View 1 (cartoon, rainbow, N blue to C red):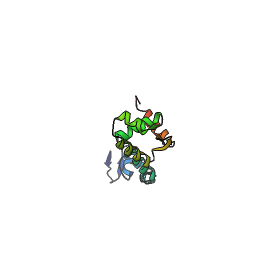
View 2: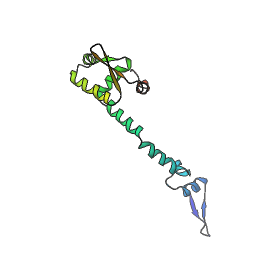
View 3: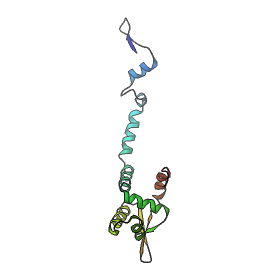
View 4: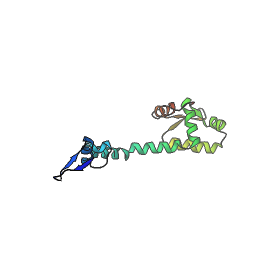
Length: 139
């Protein structure tokens, strides 16, 4: 609390009042530090970077229920398109379209075994998806 003194001096009743009077932005703790502007600039730069854009693209791809289920199946082992067709009971062209979206997005890759095209999760992406799914029970 701030009160007036007889000589028009300001007297602070606590250290908190002193800190609040010198805060440049708000009463949050970050406003009380001298490096808060640098910290906010660094956060802004981090949020506008390519890594955030990449994460956004992955989240968009995995936001579709069929694509998410495909990825969850691929975490266990590699699969052929016909296996997805059997499990999801969706048209083959819909499954192929979603596999193409996942492949173009960099989440899955494919290879041929005999005449069958087999899909698998990219090695770089698998640990990230496993870490996310490990926190979800029953997966």
